[in-house]
Image (cartoon, rainbow, N blue to C red; front, side, top):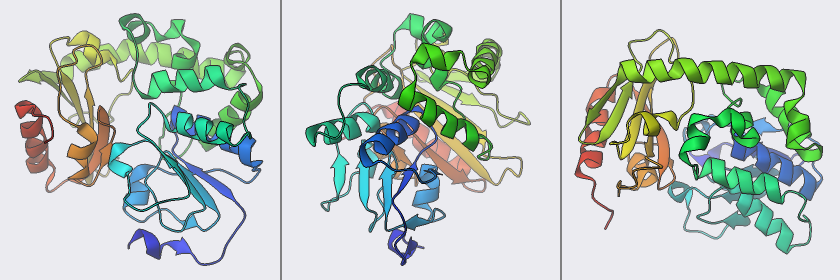
Length: 312
């Protein structure tokens, strides 16, 4: 089903459609403030847009996700999502989609500078502009720690994402970290990161300066600090994480990122993964492969990374 086929014909109230990560949550904060939207947020993963599973309506404002023809407004910053036609909203190759939205509405006079700190930290987190101390000790950096509490396990955390949108709209980061549910999740992340180091060490191999972490032998893929691999394996120029998408094991998820410390990877990750039905930034991205073809396609992806040639 093509994108133009799953636009609902009947126009509905303006609605925010965004991705459940820190950038997506901050996008929702800014859009709610600028557009004065009070309808429920529609949380969607990029793959659901790409496969036509998402139900997009005419009044929707899409952010941090691929473009769908017929939406009201579209804001994004992923190179793989750039479209040739002119769209309503804004697109820019920028550190975060939130930053694109902030600039757009500030130019219109509909947002002031109250979210400068929030957007700056969103840029740092989404573009992985982190130093070694921030990677090893995220608990010392409030915004980074908060971003690590945002996960998507079959959309069970929708109430939490909505809570964060409300809190980030009105409260300071230190006030937010004192909220009971937030504090509990932050403590859990700190414990999780400690265990994740052991999982990475046990399931990662280095091939041609690429760290390859394969969690498919585990009943459930562990989660943790996604930048930790660059600290543990400093010789790697990029990381590849492989795991099943759920217990049925019909699909394999691939996440790839350039090292944020050893900056010798010249492959455009987003464009590479776009060839396999995924996408992302120049420095990071993901895709979902069918179980039957996953091993073959993973080797094709790895071969491009091993060659490490810039796009011509």
